[in-house]
Image 1 (cartoon, rainbow, N blue to C red):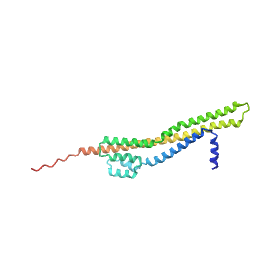
Image 2: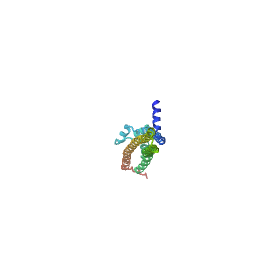
Image 3: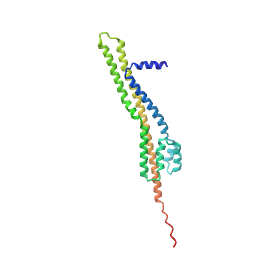
Image 4: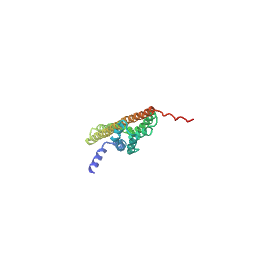
Amino acid sequence: MQEIFVAWNAIKFGGAMVYPLLALGVLAIAIIIDRSFLYARCLRMPSALADLVETFGFSWVEVEKRLKELGPRNAYGRFLQVIADNRHQPAWWVESRAGDEAGRIEKTLARGLWVLETIVTAAPLLGLLGTITGMMQSFNVIGASTLVAPTQVTAGVAQALIATALGLLIAVLSLFAFNLFSRMQSQALDTMERLGSRLVDHIRLDQESGEAAPIPRPAAVAR
């Protein structure tokens, strides 16, 4: 508790820019926690399901059974379920519905990431603004009179350094989180595209096999 109190007193030397920087930091942490829980819940892909879809001649019954185990909140389950539900439709229709669902999933995964991207840019700028105001305070003390108070000069320098360090710390944290989530989102969409292509290829194969089957002739009408 004592360490937190000391750290807070040190941060307060950063001047007025500390408060908007702390607000950005709290917002970044809230988004990171929210996205972490969402990605952990939605981007869980069992290897058994992936291996099943990659297998030639898999059973749709088995695929639907494993999709139900994932639940409606799983992004892979939502995407693959759309394909499975429309497997009796033409392949172009299935691809269209799958593309629409992939777009909705992408919007869900990307929600809030633009805020992190903004914080990456805004936090260093606010820190730089705090640096300028702190140095202006120091120069004002030096130019005010011939008698310079060292504590007042160092207070301005401390304000400049603290604001800069805090802005860079928040920006670096947000940058790492943004790149991590963007990478996870890209990998998830690539996996959906690959598995979706396997399912659509299986649908085309089923339809071609059905079209190639001989059409039974109607029984002759007795006269």
